[in-house]
Length: 269
Image (cartoon, rainbow, N blue to C red; front, side):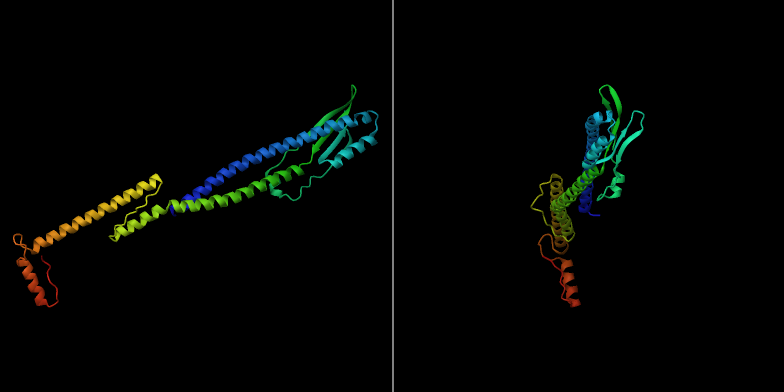
């Protein structure tokens, strides 16, 4: 796997981890807030409705009490409203089946919401006449939580595409010096001594390029010195040290080449 792909995968993993952590924290915060809202909504309804029906309940006017409970139940979003006497016997009860539509069932199973039942003691003067229990319907809370989750996921998807796109472009630009170093090494194998004149700004890559340029220069110098030594040895082998003219070995080579008739001549001075 190339370094480019490794860095790109690492960037994606880090970004996904950051998003997942943020998503979980945001989800838990929203969930806690909605559960508190459900409890507060139910408690406020229980308290206000209890005060409203207490005088009618003291007069045993159950018809009026039922009308008031129905009015509150129908215009609100409740799972159940239960009125009992002091012995716990049911006097009136209104309930609604928890049917949550437009939200995936797996989401509801994955993130269950607590819907606490709140209660209030109904009194008239100093006399206690019953208990009122109210439980909010979780459908609206689930809808709010689902919409928030979808919104966050969309934001993540768009942000991920932008970040990964920019990251890919940035990594390609960042790794250009490494590709040039690779090309420089291949040129060196072909005895082509290219140097990178433009140094990268990144300190680590800059050091690599400087080191490669230095090595290329030293290899070129070494080969030049070896060429000079080889040329000097050749001259010493075929030229007379005193006169600088071709020696016996040179003449023998010339004669042998002439007799062979291949046109090859021994190079001398």
